[in-house]
Amino acid sequence: MPHSMDWDNTEDIAIALYEEHPETDPLTVRFTDLHRWVTELDGFTGNPSKSNEGLLEAIQMAWHEEYQDNQ
Image (cartoon, rainbow, N blue to C red; front, top):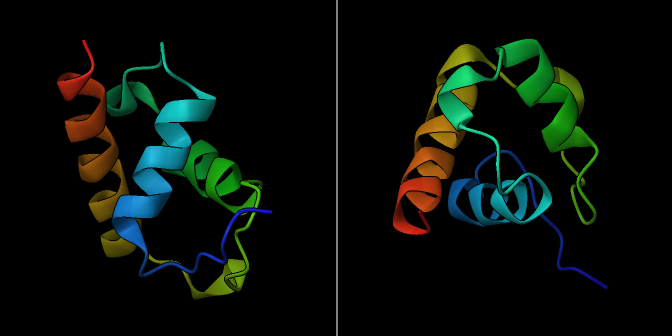
């Protein structure tokens, strides 16, 4: 079972998103979709209402780094 992730686990979330969506350029994902994808990750236990634009942007940038590192 995956370990528990919350909104502040930016790197872990980014890696999980890359594994779930390896062909997706993170910079093309709308924040509404990103929010949904994060909350649907196995092991994500954070409160969906506790996210904000800053957290989503940090996750998107970390995911983008992961995406670029694997291209």
